[in-house]
Figure 1 (cartoon, helix red, strand yellow):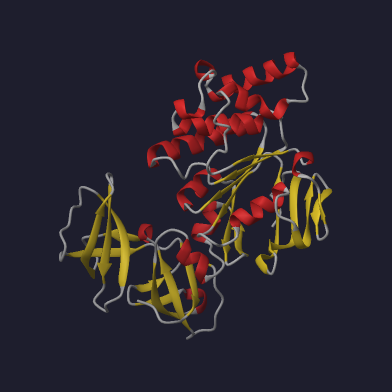
Figure 2 (cartoon, rainbow, N blue to C red):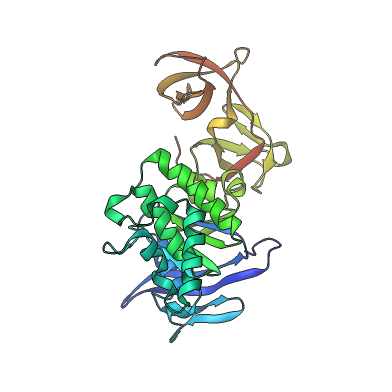
Length: 356
């Protein structure tokens, strides 16, 4: 799980951590390159915030090692103090001081700097996050997005090597959340920073991360680019967790593909199996295309209008269901039968268990 060709900034090796009497994260290893943006993705309770706290030095390790620039900052029995790690952190609730103005919040971590240098650094941060005109306001006098920018500026002001973000956009509405997520990434890139974002939202993780770590029950299930996670999931959990999709019964035909009720499917294969072995084949919505000339019919059982597209849930004659994205001008009512074909550029399959 190397960070492609980038120089490694952060490395976790065999990390286990949690709380007294309870291990939350088990045998975790990954590496983050300098200038890389990484998202830790998983549902509540999977351990992603615990990992972030361990990197920040707020949670000790039970085993394993965390290294920053090749130097050990955490291992069992040793935790370098958070303030000595040169790591910035933005919390979910921003953790701003309510009695301090925007500029005073940003200056809080710069107490060791000379007054003139401190003023200059604060001015640079205010300009970077676009809050020059709000410098004298207090947190309760600015919006959630502006509070988020203040928290980011405070974390960036000491010029840390690494920024950790613990679901910092979760309290914002959807449109603002998406916009600020991309803005924050652009700000970090402009400063040559490395960022690790914790989120339970896969759309946010995919938009943010050069690499994404999919976590479940304290374990790393897959590490890769958003493209790899979507098209090349390593196991059935990741395949079901990432994106939408349905599993259909199939029979392995070896190099010839997989025989299913939709016909013989072919594509780049992620599986190896003996001929005749039963498989489950993952069919994504973008694999199922409308085709009025196709003999394959499916019935519309649900529909969700998404503007340019409509997401249809389709029931095959066998009773199994698929998802498909049709252009929104192809407007079908519940109960309609539509003609479809399947185009699987990436053929993802796993040993069979009950599906449909």
